[in-house]
Every structure is written in structure tokens, then in C-alpha cells.
Length: 125
Image (cartoon, rainbow, N blue to C red):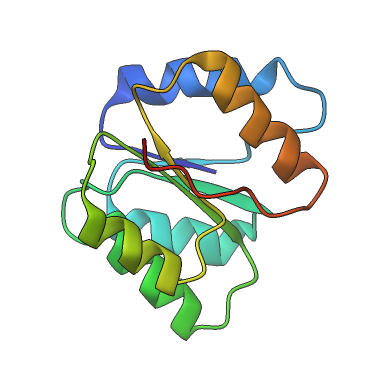
């Protein structure tokens, strides 16, 4: 599941993920409330969330999912180099905190970790 308010970014991320046979993109959302609804309906194994979303932000979505005891693995993919947001994500049990400026090779390492069902080491370069 890809959650980002920029259609072009969602499309690019989808293309990067679809090239890996271990993953299937089963849905997208452009805002926090839609993300909550679709994650509840589709039950993805992994959801990639931007922090800056219209309505509920990505961390609020994560908090709501954790309150519902959702088992979805959450990865934050953001431009924010914000220690407070990073720490909040860790406290919510996020599986990865990935910066959008990260080189594609480093993103690939995180994708492999998720495919093996192991936790990604959170990244905050």
C-alpha cells in the first residue's frame, strides 16, 4: 500500500516496487483518512506512508492503526529530517523511517529486509 499526496511520487514508487516479484501493490491513498480506510479494507502486509499528508498525517495514521491493533508493517518515507518525528515513529513501532532523498540502492536494502519479514533498521541520515 502506497500513501503519499503526490500522484507522480506514488507512480514512481509503484514502478520501483512492481519490479520486485516479492511485492504487489494492492492499493494507494492520497490522504490520511483514505489510507486508514483502505488499509482496514485491504489488509496489506506493508504500508509505505508519507508523514506530510492532508488531513491525518502519516504518524497519526500509524497511531490510529496501532490503536486498532493492526498488524500491517509500516514504513515512513518522508522528506522530514526531524528527530521528533523519527522518535515518534519509533515509539509507534514503525519498521522503517526512510528519507526520500535516499539513494535507490539503500531503499532496495530496506525492501529486501521487509520481504524477509525482518525489521528494517530505521534510517535518519
